Image (cartoon, rainbow, N blue to C red; front, top):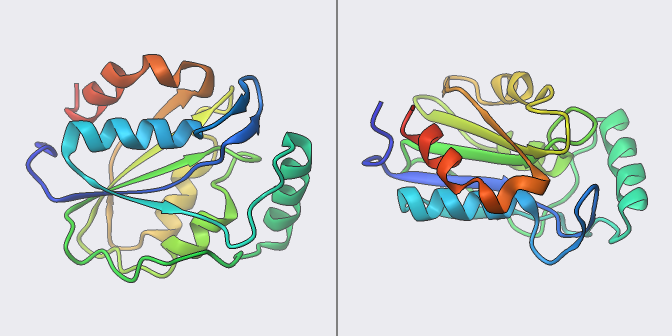
Length: 171
């Protein structure tokens, strides 16, 4: 499938600050991959951001994220994407948190009409791979064709542009 000539959008959640295995970072690992996708496909970017940011401290962030997951919360976002009508391909990016997408991503994705869209999921992680993210995306993106996802280790994002390009090209 030729994805390079289709109008595309990258919807992603990414967190900077203190991260597992990579320490303090100024740009989240998922954001790095989202920008590679933008360079390769000319896709537009939409960063999902929680209205009240997560704590900068890694352990405090994990604790808050675990509570959100256990309560099935939908945290308020700083802004929302109203629709994806003008796009054929939607890349959905996320870190793997407790084996699932971060809850702010659910808040955004559940508001959209996925019928007829091609969805390309990607994750950043430090050992979880895709976790349960694909099954979560399948439950949210009703009516979309979910393509093969890709998982990139956070410690390897800056060396992964060629892997991302091959994934997009179906190689």
